[in-house]
Length: 324
Image (cartoon, rainbow, N blue to C red; front, side):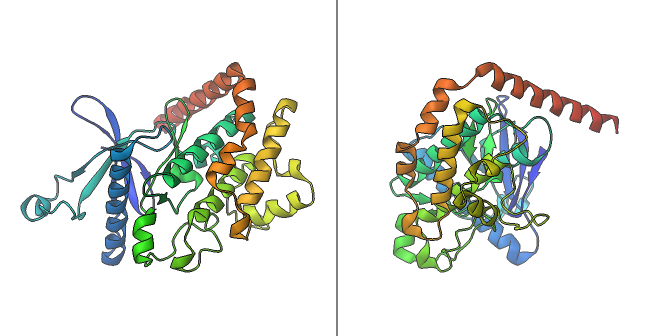
């Protein structure tokens, strides 16, 4: 297997099944006993959530769960661990997403930044992924929506991934013992105690991702002041300086101005400190005229040219690595 990604909770490898299908294989990181147990728990939770979603229905905007397996290199598992609930060396198998994450697309500095129609399209796809989770029966709260957990397939369509922190609303209502968790910069400041968890927790994170897509600024950037994208963008928007939030490297076409301004207003409402002022995901999509507009005006040649330039730059980068 080829290592293609490493995070705080686990590592992801590129693998090939017997029939030749390319897949992504995730296993928990092992960094000491306590951390290992926590990571194993998150991987087990991700397997459980994704498999349950697969049983109900599929969404084209959530990464596809293909199955689970065990690391055959661990003899203890073969001899002693026959309990399917034991995650000590369990592997998660999902579809392979060849174009990396939204975080890499926005912040790697490689190639031309995505054009505005594509940014709006990605925002729509993420919104639909959140809607799929929230309207599932029972509803699922992701709790870790961020650009690095949004992956891009071979067509550069976005899919939500990494369900290690996801919580079923039915389970939460029964137990209410799930401790607050998430990623700094995306984490809802209202989510300070278990009982404060709600769908609006995901809505706040979604709003941060919208700001990230529009500005190409990281959610937290310690080299800037203020370091938080929310703390930086909100005063500008309250002052009517919406265009100053937009990524200045890519000219904003006149026909996209209305769509992007609408996205900014949506983002601002999503990151409101008052939970009751945040819209539900259905309300966002129902009022998403910008999403409808982009379908009509998107220029395929522009997007294809941009995609081609990114692919070419990736090839050049790979060649340079080989030379070294």
